[in-house]
Amino acid sequence: MIWKPSRVRRLLMVAALALVASSAPVLAQQCASPAQARRAVAAGKAVPLSVALQRAGVSGQVVRVALCRKGRRAVYELGVLDKKGRLRKVTIPAN
Image (cartoon, rainbow, N blue to C red):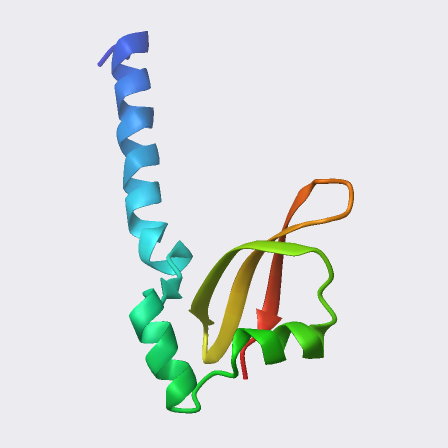
């Protein structure tokens, strides 16, 4: 059987897609909706964001927040603007 470049390219593309599709559940993170996050804080499963920020000593303007689960831990995934205007991704414990 002679392998044509287009056939090899197709085979590699299918293999790459299969690899990405199979690893998607591993890479996915479970983040809560705003309503779920409020319920988690109310139930004591996560501390309020203000408490978590104070404990972690985060400085800058928080522009994005998500309450997520990494393994067995609850964490806040933050987008924080520093004093120079750069956006940093910060992860802090939520419990």
